[in-house]
Image (tube, rainbow, N blue to C red):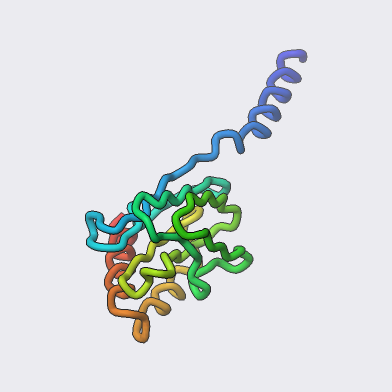
Length: 150
C-alpha cells in the first residue's frame, strides 16, 4: 500500500510542476529579413497555452501590438514601447495577429498560434482581405500558406 501512496504523491507533485516547463520563443523585429523589409522572424509562432514569446527589437524603431480584429475571445490586447524588448505569456488559446504599428503598411505582421486548432483562423483570414494594405495581405497570405502546409 505505501508504494501506491508514493506514486499518487509523485504524480500530484509532477502535475503541479508542469508550468515550470513552459517554453519561450524569441521573435526578432528586423529592418530586413528573409521575407523582405520590416519583418518579424519568425513570422509564424506555434506555442502551447502558458508559453511565452519574447519580442526582441534587433533593429531600431520597432515595437509589437496585437491587431484588434485578430484576437481570440477573452484575450487581452497588448502593445510594447518602441525599441524595448517585450515578453508576453499567452494564457488564452487561439490565434493572435500582431503588428509593428509604425511599419504595419509595409507588412510587418505576424501570427501567434496558441494551442491546437484555433477556432478564430477563418475570421482572421477575412480580416486580411481588402481593404487591408497590400503588403499586409501578402505577408499574411504567406503565413497562412505556411500554416496550412503543416
